[in-house]
Amino acid sequence: MTRRPGFLVYGLLAAFVVGSAAPFYWSFLLGSHTAQVAAQGVPPLLPGGHFLDNASRVMDTVPFWKALGNSVLVSSVCATSTVVFGTLAGYAFAKLRFRGRSALLAGVVATMAVPTQLGIVPLFIVMSKLGWTGTTWSIIVPTLVTAFGVFFMRQYLVDAVPDELIEAARMDGCSQIRVVWHVVAPAARPAAAILWLFTFMATWTDFFWPFIALPADNPTVQVALNQLQSGFFKDYSLVLTGATLATVPLLILFVLTGRQLVAGIMQGAVKG
Image 1 (cartoon, one colour):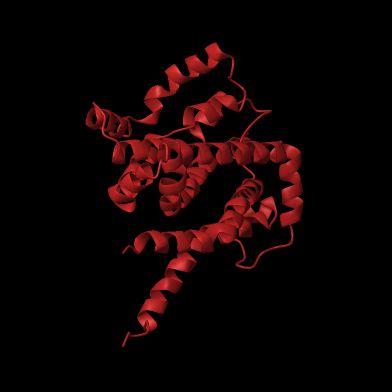
Image 2 (image 1 turned 30 degrees about the vertical axis):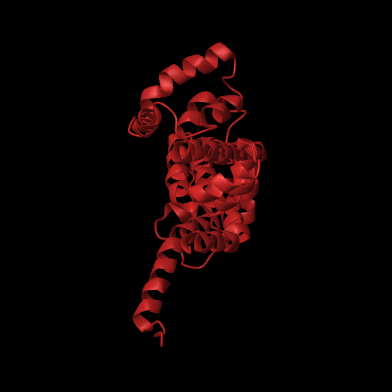
């Protein structure tokens, strides 16, 4: 017989939930008060009634809706592209035999050890030569595929797709593309869902490169939030209202995909 979780387990889970939700609640709390209350120190523990007013001020201060649209577009395209190219490359490294495979995989893994900041200047020069600076192309194209995505999918597909299944599909007359579509893609669905979600979050929260490549009138959400705190006096109620609004889409994404994500993880964890 399996034992039910005790009080200690539920207590630890409750503590983790409270600790995880505390930063979001703190942002919403300060965003629901006026700038004077936020500047005084610790505000009341109950929300105030000024969140909608502060949200309206955010819309008037920065092009928030345009920034939100840019972030949704860039994050969705980059996440989808990373999953597609990562699955294709991961399958090639995991199941195909070709000369230089180990050396190429080692090169892909080695690029993950290179700090992103080292490539910012050459990347900006390339984007400038192409005439893409100031547009979302400069944010999308460099992150269409990532070394982590390739390595992550390769590690998953090594065990998730048996060689016998691929050989059986080839004996049935499947081309390489059909093998990927009908055999590899269904088996890679749990890992692809996780990779898509993590890539979307990483792109959504990225600030350094969009801050350099995009102008003030065409920002992403994170760049727009930075514009809220420009000036000598920082209105923390305004800044944290913007931070709360920028977090809401991620929460909605988790609510909509959480059950499918957990089901995919469980499906990928149970084999045999």
